[in-house]
Length: 541
Image 1 (cartoon, rainbow, N blue to C red):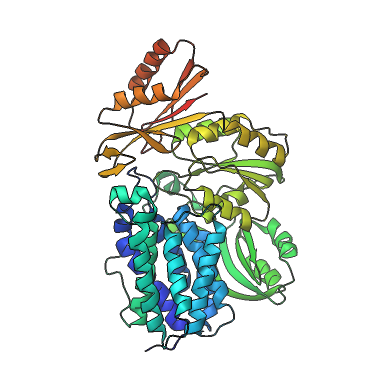
Image 2 (image 1 turned 180 degrees about the vertical axis):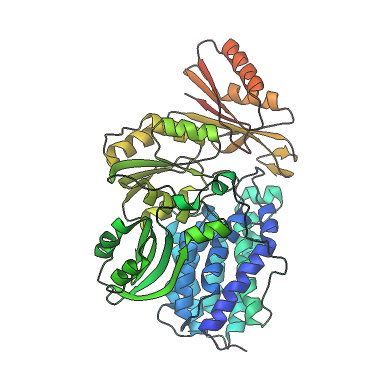
């Protein structure tokens, strides 16, 4: 019987939880009502929570609150998709509720779960019941009601029972779930996390016996790099624990900036995370120690490393010249779509969207790279908007998110971009522009399901308008024609087709010619988007 959770136990509970979710992420993905091959809930939650597990796995902690704080920071920065962002907010609230505690008592844990619930709800502008939010709300209510339980074990039993009850009720709250015959995927993912924590509490921690290898094959571009071309040879990373929380890292940043590139100085309270490529790591450390004590120091000789192994990820492009006044970042998949955004003035394209939602940290890294005082982010996917908005809170420059939910919306927003305009003027113009375009897309179903009285079979083509399934048809050409017919009206003037990697140029041009004959009053344009997953992105203006 456990009376309190210390640092070592909480760390073990988090690692067990990450393993439990990883083992079951495919099952959570399978609960998604939407049958499109998009960034799935289980995958997004697992990537989010694994970022925390990796962060704490090699560290030692003196208090439970320190563990909770580390998990909160890592999930916040690693959050992917809406489900990942909400999950990060739950653990941010848990951390706030555990602040200053060496050990977590029954009462502490109960009230921390309530804090996690409150924080998650406050992060969502329009909370939807029948989701992960409902599950954490029921769990929090049960936790507070059992705050005087005799043990942590008893508290877990109480709120887990209520969480499972809430999950079973989600189909009664969301008609889409009931029609598909499933429970909410995000809620199930959350319960897997707490099941993993409970297993560790019981001395039966979940481990991964067949965890996938993390090594990656080097790309041709990486293999072609000559080590002698690496200008700054030492990758230097460390964390500063400031002597005085009121001191800022601005002077330190300015001092070390001229000595290298790929500089990141991320300040969160009393913690400053530093990354720089430099030829003089000693000077960087000498300046850092003036601000606070140094921990987790890591210095790698990149020239030596490159001669022996290829880094897992490509270095981010270097920021050059003086800081720009304004820049735009866009999320996109497909070389052709990326080229369109670049031609329209986007400074940085984050590769992602369908099948892989970029994390908050990915967006923050892009913000850092564009080297601008003001940044506009185009998510171009409803499942990326929350992660982008979370980056706004963490960024050190002014960041605005235009809530683009589709690629055509993002492209239309960029046609209104004013490079010499202010951030405020551009935000207003772009928000107005995205209301003037009709967006469509065609993909295929990855599972059998039923949505809005539409029977969908695996392999069917799905014609989608504004992200919602409008048509289901086993024939791609018929789906394309019917979807365009729904989108075009008497006021339409322009039809634009972006064809994906699974569509030939010949087939796309043939469809374009048929539209020109059918809609002689419309200008029809076709372009290779090269996007995966979606056969076509369609825009009607």
